[in-house]
Image 1 (spheres, rainbow, N blue to C red):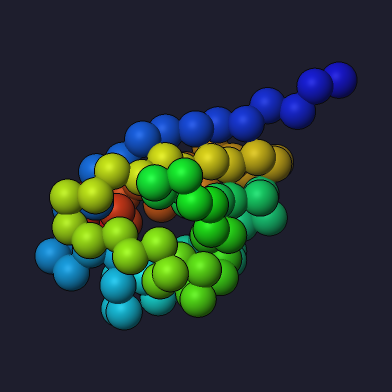
Image 2 (tube, helix red, strand yellow; image 1 turned 90 degrees about the horizontal axis):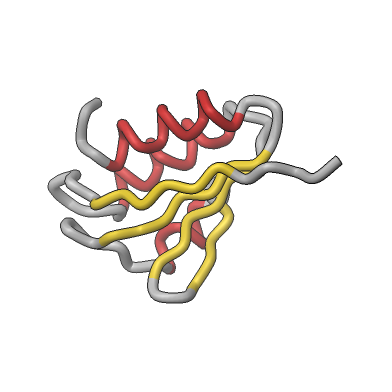
Amino acid sequence: MEEQVVERMVTIRTEAGLHARPAALFVQAAAKYSSRLSVLKDGREANAKSILEVLALGAGRGSVVTLKAEGPDEDAAMERLVSILSGDI
């Protein structure tokens, strides 16, 4: 059986981009899910559960990133992470 990966492109709308406090909220939310979660920007991929990797992406406001989720709670994880990046929290 082939594993399914959910992907979605998101424009970061949080005021400070994916830096400091928003990145911490993003990583804390990602850590609550058992699925494998990653963020891609400009050809670089970061583990969504690693604050250092997420910060290293340097994703500011207006940046377009791709979220990938793979696992038993991938849909719920994707919805939550998209909400955070969209500034809906």
